[in-house]
Image 1 (tube, rainbow, N blue to C red):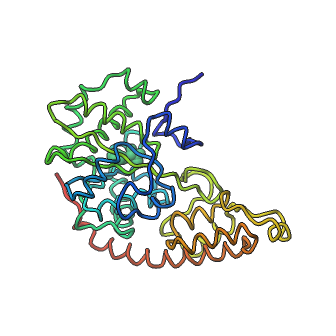
Image 2: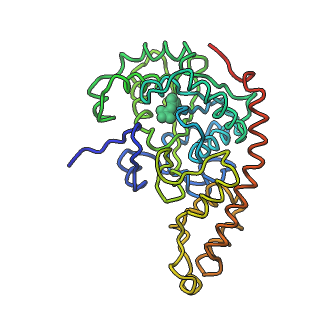
Image 3: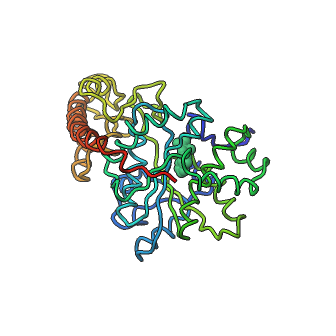
Length: 360
Ligand code: TRP
């Protein structure tokens, strides 16, 4: 049997989250693990992580910790999967974490051929303003570009002697130089806050990024002189695209983007995969299946914040009281309303974006 590895650079995805969690020794996330859980935590979208207890302890005892994530600026628009990651970052920021969000421009250059100039442009015009519009507090967030952060680059050089090629092959099933460079850089992205202050840190990311976390933890363990806390991580399920493909990817399917226009929203929602029956009569008699319905996925992950309202809609859909057309209309309205506010916050954030970037 072929050995299973997760390849963080591919867009194939794990079908069975539980198997993945077991196979790679992830902890299961339980709703009660953290105080004031957000909706992704309450609704099972956040499903696992590593070393979650130490972070929950920091929150409860008000001890210092950090949250850090990084995103490649390859996409020209952000899909809702990125929103889920930023929602997690915002949650930890609100619980008192020192916050870092980095633009993985070097990784994008090495693995996707995106120029640093183009990456910068996309980050400044789209990505960073969108993160702020999602609710990240710019005054409390350290944004940086990998290409401009010498501390991070130096650390990745220094730590490179703690990894071996065999380890790379075992973790990634691949050992191309560009990937080696990118993952070592990611290791130091993740650990560098501890150069200034030793404290636990949590990394919210997609499950496809877990190999990087394993590598980081291995290297941190071996680099004894640094006395690093091993980084924790927290994973959310992917936001399926509206056609039901698991990972919203830019190239195929019917992904929804932040900043989509009213028309785009309407069109995309109208073509969404639903859990409805073939005929109206059947739907009323047998009811729909919300578990196979992409609109419910959207309601659950992003659009309906009130638990009672969501439960009622699920029940009514199962009971044949709600038809696909009504769901579509409602999803369109909620999204258009959301986007109207979002766009305002985005334009606001874009105006004073340069204030929020530091060079090091
Ligand atoms: N590899 C990540 C991606 O594909 C980006 C990334 C770079 C990152 N450095 C990081 C993510 C540090 C989390 C933490 O999008």
